[in-house]
Image 1 (cartoon, rainbow, N blue to C red):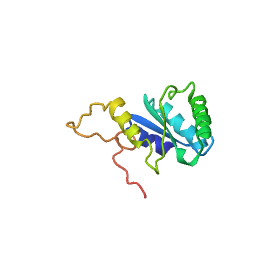
Image 2: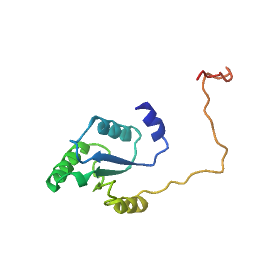
Image 3: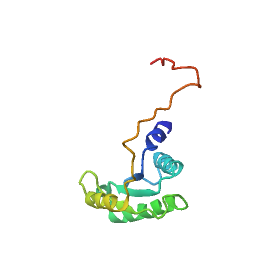
Image 4: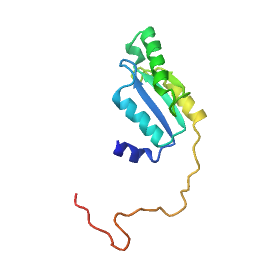
Length: 130
C-alpha cells in the first residue's frame, strides 16, 4: 500500500473500480478506499465494471452492496456508474462526469522544482545501493 500512497500524493480525484462479477468489497477494494480516505480526496467516482457479464438483478444487488460499503466513508454520496470497459459501455458518461465535475487545480509550473533529499542535514549525499 505504501507504493500506492506515494503515487496517490499527486492525485486530485479517484476512480474506484469495482468488478461487477465479484462480491463487494474485495480486499483490494477496501485497501483502495482506505487510501482514498488517507489522501483525503474529495472528488470520487465509483465505477461498477463488467456489468456485461452479469444479469440486471445481480448488478442492482451489487449496487446496494457498494452503497453499504461506502456508507460513512469519504466516498459516501459519490456517483456509481455501471460500465463495461471491454465493450466501452458508459465510458462516455465517465468522461463527461470527469470533465464537468472534477476541477483542475492551478499548478505552479514556473517555480524551480524542489527535491527533498535523503539523510540528515549536513551529512551530504549518500550513494544508494541498487
